[in-house]
Length: 236
Image (cartoon, rainbow, N blue to C red; front, side, top):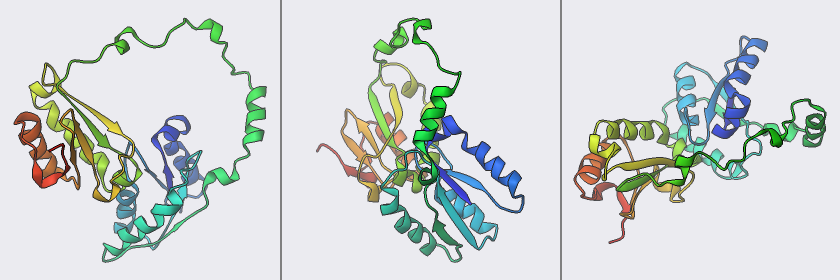
């Protein structure tokens, strides 16, 4: 069983804690979690580990509230493609989303009965820290897609590699040539993923892998030359 969630849901519900409870209730059952966006491990990564361990069947349980309706459209085909690329692969099924079994009206009523309500009058008026009104000094900004499909294609470890490469270059983390790097949700050309964009250059890179990132950092971010081998669109 693989619990398939989103980072925002995990931050509130602690998906790994749910995994631990399920394991405790059925010690013979293998239970893992995977994420559809922003953080790893991705579903193919978890499935790969389970397949290598010799499992014959895996059930994916969507654990997002609300569930992304697009999952029913693209995930079956994506998992079928994953299976087709392996010499041996388990049978994979997708269970009904957990939200199908949640009575939100009952939960709302229970929330009203809870003693955990907080009076906002006890909080100091604020819209955030003073520094959040300032744009950091920088020369470029990268948006690295960690939407569901790019994450499915291995975006999370690539994003971490990009951050590690940039940290090694003093000029890319501070000063006028600093590069701000942020994860983003879907940027749309999913079939060309993993995708990232570099601004204000207006450059789109796709089909990223570790070697692509090595070259983009060295040749584009440091050397100011677009790496055409991985460019899927630029302003020129």
